Length: 81
Image (tube, rainbow, N blue to C red; front, side, top):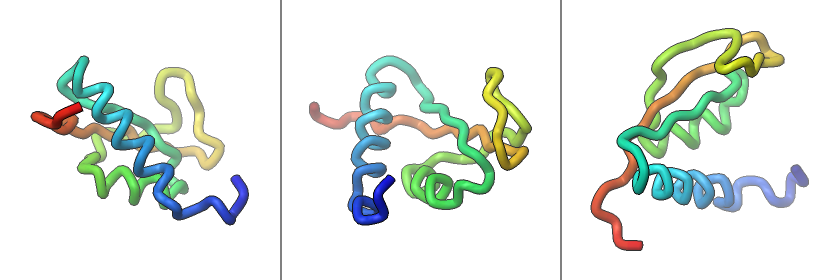
């Protein structure tokens, strides 16, 4: 990604949209992130994601750094569309 577009809130907007979308369909939002991707881990922590498991791969996806984190959050409830 072009560094000029970083830290402008796009990741937060997409994460909120994903959480809202999943919240209409399920009781939990899941994601997995490479353990060395501190920016994404921080972003997801700010949205209430909690670590569930650490592993070298999830669902056949292996992490180049050798380790990933499986995260879970409760979707927002009671929001108007």
